[in-house]
Image (cartoon, rainbow, N blue to C red):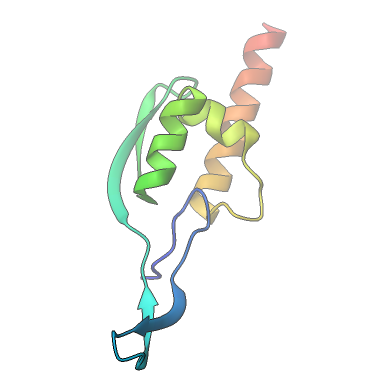
Length: 98
């Protein structure tokens, strides 16, 4: 399983740890990934995602999963999130037409 956020695309970064003696050691800085269940208002059910803690804060700030996915860029979303984004858009179109 890739260490990558499903909503923001945030993944591991490479850098150096630098000691007091200025010795440099290669290291990987991992994102803080958490398993969460997010509720979709349009679909009426919860979906599980593995996202970074800062992405969870962004989802809450934007007003929920549906609003976050509507504004999200397609190239950073995972396949599961992209599929859900399309389903939500179809459901909203159907609700507007009815």
